[in-house]
Length: 234
Image (cartoon, rainbow, N blue to C red; front, side, top):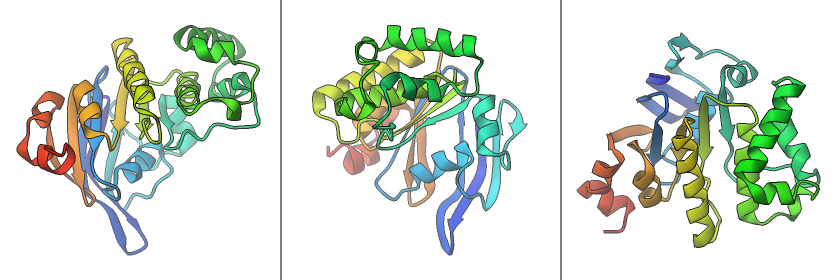
């Protein structure tokens, strides 16, 4: 397994955000984590990235214990997160945003990665000299993903990529996520849109109040009666 979360707990003061969470992600997989607001999904991503608290348990990456490893060291190992709400640098040009994403790479590697992202996202190539704040919501989401890919991640963490987007743009985002998996990028997708997330997932997990309560293939979870009632409105 590329990533293994073992009995992980996390607290904010006296509030337990994660309670003995265990999950795993294999190299090349697209794994989705779904759950309601406040379930602990974003906290888990923050812990994996190295910017969230750990009270107990371990985070293993490629058979290495990284539980106490600083966030910048995790980026260099290949763990890169696309944050909720995109968080692009609005006054800066699109190309400047992208180059920031490749800060751990050499100049030659950055140039190669930049060309790849422009090929993957032609709309960004056309807008490379525009301030990022002038892009549409969908284009900003693509920029946030491309910025993360500039770091050549082994594990890409996506936090609510469809948040606030029109339905047509949501479809484009999920198509892009599927394409990334098909190109060999390992993806951990955290998403409230359970139907979309599980439809494209190799495997999925369901989180409630800081605990993983269900785990199965994406297709199996889509037909699970508990998931259908709680998250799919069926």
